[in-house]
Length: 74
Image (tube, rainbow, N blue to C red; front, side, top):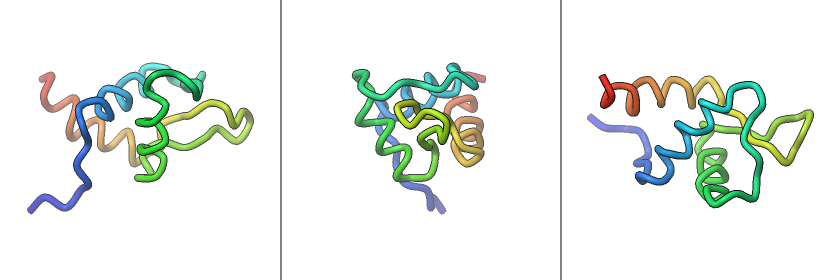
């Protein structure tokens, strides 16, 4: 049974880009900003405490990336 919220293609792409940014995080205000906010609302991303204008991926976001995005690439 599927019990995770659906991620639009744009949000899956934003999650992948966010993971690729690593420790530097991804700045707010880019074209995928709305997706980053949605990912944060879902607990898959968060604003960095040391720089609240950048997002970073959470552990839940990493797990979701492994289960949904990397599974398709394999």
